Image (tube, rainbow, N blue to C red; front, side, top):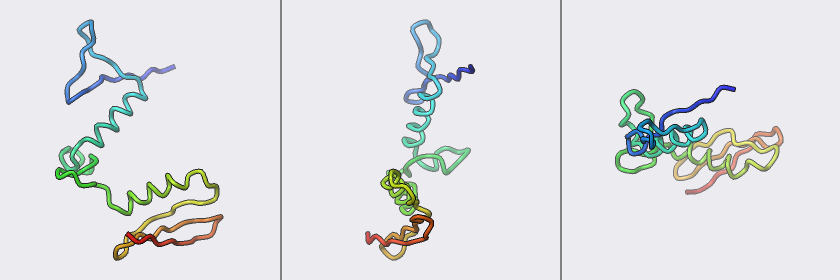
Length: 112
């Protein structure tokens, strides 16, 4: 079995262990650490990938509303078999959800 470990980083610094080395995280904890870093990073501040980060420098949601709504709709409907959120689009103050319900394409409009 291959064991994946990486250093734990808090506040931008490596965390030392009691023996003078560095604390290590297992694979799952490393993923959680990376997710927290992505959400906490100002969007556009990471020079190799300007799309990295959760919010812009003013604290505004960096993900477009339609994409955020699609994620929330998929989360809300995940337990219902045969219903899938294909896409979401914004249209003059409303969201149009494009759904597939038992292999039939349908739409529902939500007024914001």
